[in-house]
Image 1 (cartoon, rainbow, N blue to C red):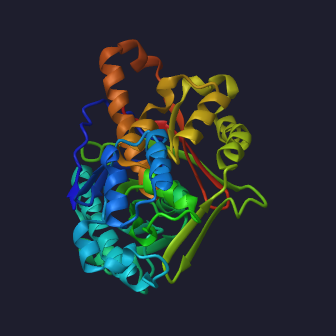
Image 2: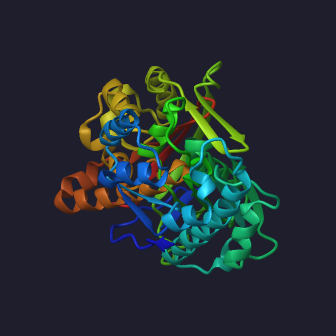
Length: 397
């Protein structure tokens, strides 16, 4: 695995509001296998021994429209040599997949968490609570225990596990971690997310067009965040204050993102109406959060936007519906381009890019530093269809 922990945080840190949960550090990690998007089609069809020219053309087209350039994946030629049945149609392989996935997500989660704790600057013994998020494993005990053990956390660490929340898992994890931090003064909560697509890897099939979307879009990796209230001055560097969180599901849309765990692994179906459903409901959802601090729809471009990049269509429709300036979704688009849709992890990568972009802009524009986008929204959309949203305040300028 390859971790990437260091983020240049040379900005000025504002004071956090007393008792409000703040993000204190970020970290990430990836498997070693880097996939270049332009080489994906030939590699995928070679590994699955498929030579259907129509499917190949379709995947090539999808690879361009996703805007993804690179991704990291657990799947490798070595794994396919050891488990050739993973590339065969109709073979019960859930046991083999989970054997690989359970170990991979734990290794990545440990590495991302170690990078995050290093960035935080306090010892792992100061972690009091753990929230673990994954849609890529299934076992008892769960990955939360193996992560706590791998990090050497105290057996008294209070653990929470969130399974199979898909793309909204990262922001859902932040919502839960925020509540824990604010209800336990002095606590420090580690949120870890870890995902691999190996559970859903399948050969191309004319009967499953959704699998080609997955092959062109999804990536693997892990993310980690340390949260707590009342940061210790001089030791902890607050990045974002999490003001208010809300969740909302759209009634009668549970089939739009439909996932099933089967003998052949996990299979997904994505409804074509997903981007439209998000577009139709995004304004009302955002306005609920914005009203809390006296913002309205005229303030969209005065805020920052940390949006889970489910795909380019969702970002494009949001940008158009809310009339956002192109730079508002730069961090989301960069994360999608560099890592693909890495499910629950992706919000961590978006936040890292957001800090980087913010420091870059402020370095070139002192005026913006004074009147910049202090308030913003963290958003993600997952099965349900579930909207997760957090009204946040940027503390690094």
